[in-house]
Picture 1 (tube, rainbow, N blue to C red):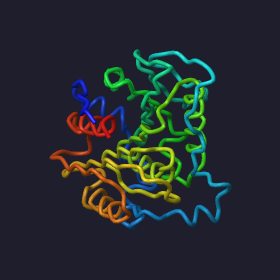
Picture 2 (cartoon, rainbow, N blue to C red):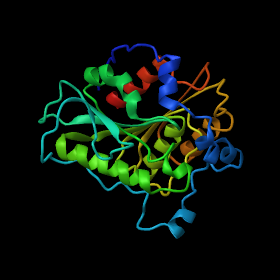
Picture 3 (cartoon, rainbow, N blue to C red):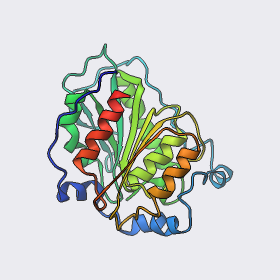
Picture 4 (spheres, one colour):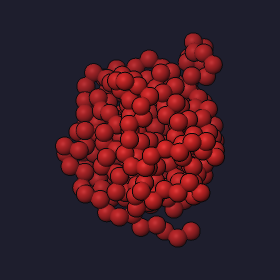
Length: 275
């Protein structure tokens, strides 16, 4: 398959990255993040206790792409699914109903919201990507503060709405996140690997899937000087585990802190759109 060239985008500034992951070292992260990583809870099978106390698989995303039954607008738009914490969707200007588009579900870091999706609209236009960026129901994602449930349900509503309005390619569906969002992307991506074909996790802290379905490909990156989610306790433990579990993993370490260098974003997008 021809290797797609992704247009270079403006550097991710400190202000932009703070918008993507503001509060990442705050109370929400502390609830599940580094403290739990030190206890080993980043491991891949944290699901049984949730199955015992949960109801009807609250970690599952049953929405599936199919022929759209309505027509939605192009460009950047609010989801309109909640009056408070809602989310954004971006549909590229070149979208055509008869050409199903790749989709990336974008998950923000702790304390953040969906606004960071605006950083990637030019990339979406270049690569023909639909971007879906929901807000978490609280300061961070549900599994970090009590277990799967509210955020999974909201994400499923956002996916179902998107599938009803737009033609989405079921062979090119990714979930992506940074920091807490990366941990959640790994967790729901491995749990719902029969929906997502790719997972992009930038500086994750852990992975806690409720179960394993499908075989999504994984892209994981981490800065060797990360002091928020230290690489030795996080990705250098996560990656060998998912590799032993049989997942196809591309892993990149870089000389930097808790961030996403533009070249890592570029590589991840080429990896997704080409593979």
